[in-house]
Each structure stands twice: as C-alpha cells, then as structure tokens.
Length: 310
Image (cartoon, rainbow, N blue to C red):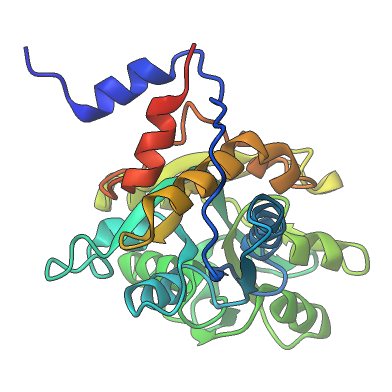
C-alpha cells in the first residue's frame, strides 16, 4: 500500500512534543520577516514572532518589515528581498503567485491561524448586506494585501461594483468614523486591532455574509470556509456569519534548512508568546501546522515536524 508523505507526518505528530537539540543554532547575518500593515493581526503577530526569533538567534539581526500583507509578502519572497513572510492561503491556491516557472521558490514553514472577512459599517448606516455596498466608497485594505485580493474576488463574483480605496485597516477605521468611507473590508485575524480601537470611540456593526460565504466556497473550493465570528470578539456586537481563510508562514525555499528548522520550532513552541492578545492566533499548534494545502513544506520545517516525538 502506498503511504503519502502527509500521512506519515500526521502519524508522527500524534501526541507530539518538541524535541530538544544540543547543537548550536545557525547564525545568518540577517533574517527579514514580511508582516503586514498597521491595524492588522499580521503586523502584531509578525512583530512578536520576530522578537522571539531574535532571542533564538542572538547572532542574527532579525528585521520585522511592515508591508501591505499577503500579496506583497509573496512578491517580496519571490524577489528574494525577504526570507520569511505571512500570507493568507487563497492567493497561493489561486496559482497566480506560485508560478509554474518557479515552483520551488516558496515553501511553507507551517499553517498558523485563520483570518476572517469582516465588513464594518457605522452602527447608524442603512447598509444591511453586501449588495448594499454597490456604488459606495469602501476600503479594500492596503495595495497587495490579502484583503484586496479576496475582496476583489468576492465582489467580482457577486457582480457588485464599488468605489474601492486602498489603505491600512487603521486608517480605514479612522475614515469610517469621520464619514470618509461607507464600509471597511478587512481580512485578518480576530479581534482586529483597528476595529477594536475604533469601537472605543465610534459605534460599528459587522455585516452578516452567510449566503456570500457559501457562494465563494463553492466557486473557489479549498481556501474558504464559512465561519462565525464569536459573540465575545467585540463586546456587544454579537456573532457574525462570514468566512475564514487559513494563514501560512512562508519561507524562501533556498533559505538554509537549519535556519528554517529553528524558525519552525520557535513558532510552534512559543505560540503563546507569539499569539498573546489574539485569541484566534492562539490556535497555532503542531497538529494543524502541516496543513498547508498545495504549498509544500520547507525541508527544514518538515525535518522539525518529523523530529517531534510522542
């Protein structure tokens, strides 16, 4: 009987605990991690990961690079301008960013946590559903972000045309409060810092998207899963029906296996530190870490996962 590599890894991870190593960690001169924009969980989780890596690699200058998020991060990885980067899964599954001409250029360190699409409007707004956004001024997140990618895909699928603006989630929340925007779309972890901060001074609502979530999942099987934002996420806002997308930590495939093994170990043994203050990010764990879809694990990451023992 033929056994897949994924099956072997899953069997090895049952009841896994991290293995110890007596060897000294590698010491690259610099390690650049592409994160995300102000007001997004990528930015905060990425910053915490960079700090943890700096402790694990004391001879290495670890750089936390602020970016527009997923699409920009993958581009920077392909161009060799960063070593590590965070990305939602859907642009990668789409195939536009994992070129057939260079299939080995980017690998996965592991799956981290899920992002949720959130559509925020003022509490007093007449907008009640996604179709009501037609003709409205809407933030699609920063240029080259996962939000921009997914929002463009979703609204195109539904035939909804809007006046799309590109900006950070933090800036979008400020403009929503001042009347400069009708709605903010944010594909990010929960709670989203920009929305949490805005709610302290300005009443918001999140639009329910149950039908839209099902339609997107049918049109693009794989990365999209209908999901509910728990009622406890944003105080009195209550639950919100939307969809979730897995997030991956990516690495240049050319990055040294020993370095990536250290990165992988840090992510999955220091997850509490990395996810501090972000309940969704607290889902980072070794059991789901190998579920990276069509993106192959980096050899260094695979080696660490295999090294875990019962």
